[in-house]
Image 1: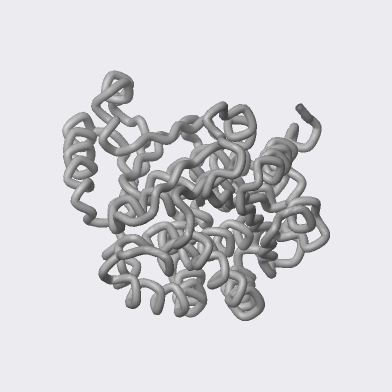
Image 2: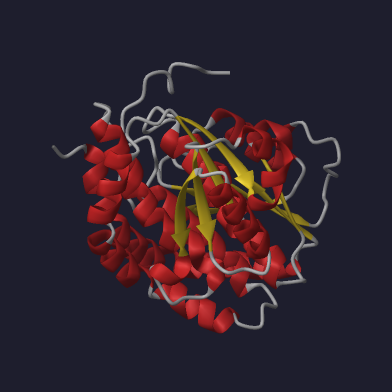
Length: 336
């Protein structure tokens, strides 16, 4: 049986191609604004804030000239350190462009005279209309709650903006690989389905998953736990930085507990490997996604690569439990 999420997953490469084609000049415009700013704020919720975490940590690992802070919508809205007229740029991310807390923060930033940028998939949304520089991703309407094509295009826009403005020594190669990402996604969608379908069937009866990653992989671990496993597969899940394994989780890590590790051979993945070794000693059910098994790209692009096999895993995990991976039970009913 195919769910709507299946079609949206397969549309990810074309969505990214169309977004780059239509919005590249806007992305370059925002990169110049970043170069002139003293600080960059990234604001989002759910899948959107996971893209902010990933690009923030990628920049911090590779570049020294950009000062980045990440906030959820209302955290930014209630931030008392904002100064009227400060030389900052605030980039707001939202699939719908109507996320209440993110929209409130955009309006607050406009009131303070900040440079405001919105990245959204709905061209007629409030966030696109009200930001000083709007960027509309070209995914058409997305219905599956996990956010597949909107995630990949949003993440790509953030990488293009911030790495173009960065002093990362390998940024030319990274940006060239980012431009080729639609082709890589095409291949990954074909090559990783069967393996992750089998993995999902193996783990379908598990009720809780821990998701660990280092650097930009933490942002994806956050998405995996919060909006993929909990919202899509209706499984309990918890994200952590790999280095935090020995705090808290180490006391709950018992035999047969499933832990998903995202590993890319970053310097900080020395700690990820120690966590994997400890998990092996305790006979935990380790699921390891290692970048070298999927693509030969700059390590900082890991989230783009890992998200495809993870989408297949969650898609079939939901299916084998009789759930539609794109449906919701309560999201959309709660407004505050």
